[in-house]
Each structure stands twice: as C-alpha cells, then as structure tokens.
Length: 264
Image (cartoon, rainbow, N blue to C red):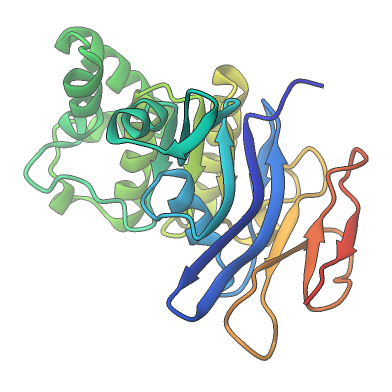
C-alpha cells in the first residue's frame, strides 16, 4: 500500500481550557475518501481547519505528502514552519468552506478562475476554459456571468466546489459539501464529486449527511463523537459498527482499522 498522503499523529487542539481534539491519530491513503461525522462541537471542522493551517496545533504532528505541515527540518532538528513552508504546503490542499466565501463583486466564472490566474500564473483563456468545464460539471455553465447575489444557496455551493477544483489540488477538503443542496441536486453533486475524485486522485475529508455517505465510501469510515459530559475530546468510531464506549481512537492496523478504547 502507498504511503499515507495525510497523517495525524497524536494531534491535540485546545481553545483555552477546552480540549477539542485529544491525541487524535489516523491517516488517509492516496485515492481514499474519508467522511467525518459527529455532533456539533466534536471537532470535525477543526480537523479541516488544521489541515488548511487556519488553526495552530496544540500538540502532535501532521504530515501531508510525507512532509511535516506545522514543522520543517532545519539541520537535524524539527523547528516551527515559516510562512514560505506554509505557502508551499497549502498549494497541495483545496477546501470548500461551509459558508462558500464567494467574492460578491466577481461573476461566477471569475470566482472560479481568479485563483489559478493569480497564484499559479495560468493564462486567462486557459483558466476560463477549465472554469467552464468545471461549471458544466456542477451544472452551472449557464450561470457563468451571473453574480453571487443572483444565485441560490445551493448554486453558490456548487460554484465553491468548482472553484476549489480549479486549482487541481492533491487533496480536497469539504465542509458540509452538500448542506445547501436539495435532494436531487445533492445526489448529482455527490456523484460528480466522486467522479472528480476518481479522475484527479483527490483525497478528501468531508462532512456530509450520513445517509448519503454509505454508497460512496469504499470501506467503513471513522465517525467523530464527543464525550457526553463535555463538549470536548473528539473521538472516532466505525460508521458501520456500534460505538465502543464514549471515547475511542483509531488503530491503523488491518484493512478496516480496528478501534480500541482510548485512555481518559
């Protein structure tokens, strides 16, 4: 099996005295599709924000493509990463945010093409051709010149998906990727998202309604839970198995990752 493209090793994230992630360890291999499922406050979005370096680590290590995300090698020592390291690592990852964050003063096509032109030096004609292909994929080619204020919530979400894919990242992160879509567009978007992942070998950590996940996942995936007595200590359990206690961790042994109780 190929080396993991994402590795979380005993990751801890605290906000003041609140422990949101408590020694979280798991990995993602190339081509895998991961879903993070759990109640509000269990740490789902925090994991995605850490991978995008929008939050800082309180403890542990994260690797992306075999490289440390928050640290870098200096001689024989690991030191905190500088901004140049962060910039290089961020280029490997794309994200669709829960609130979309489209530029309100740019049309749909410009929202999709702006980042490749500004950050990757893409020529505008090539970026627009790619942008139209992606808008066609998400069913919004006819809205290319529309402004975000003229779109529904579901249409904005599909534009955000196309915009993230335009940068051709190695890894895609989706935060509630189908939350604003009606059932039929939602199923279509899920199918296009899955097809895109196959073509471009994207790996994703996603948050979705659970019933939509089962036909798309190649094997049982982790589920985030939280301790019943506090909004902290996110844990993982198998999507297709009952929880083994209120707090569990992933063991990376075996094809379906057996779970073992975590120490309190």
